[in-house]
Image (cartoon, rainbow, N blue to C red):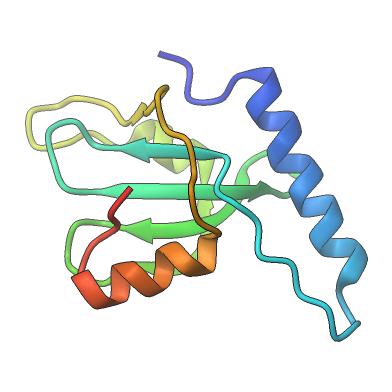
Length: 117
C-alpha cells in the first residue's frame, strides 16, 4: 500500500504552508491530522498533519508504542523502511478520520499513555 496519495500529500503541504505563513505572529495553527500510519504487528502509531517542502520531513504526533507520544518531525523515507516484529511494513489507516486537532490528540495520549485514534 502506498503511504501517501497525491491528495493526502497536497493536504499535508497545504497545512505546512499555512503554518509557515503565521510563524512570527502570535497565532499558532493546530491542524487536524491528515493521515494515520501504524505498525500492523506492533504498537507504533503516527498522526501526521504537515509535510515540509523537502517532501520527506513530516510533522505530527509520534508514538513508538513505548507510552510516550511526542509532537515532532519524522522522515517519510525512514517510515517506509521500518518493519515490525514480524517483518510487516508500516501501513496507512485508510479509514482514519480525525475528530480532534493534533494537540488534542497529544493531550489524550499523554493521559492514556498511547495515541487513541
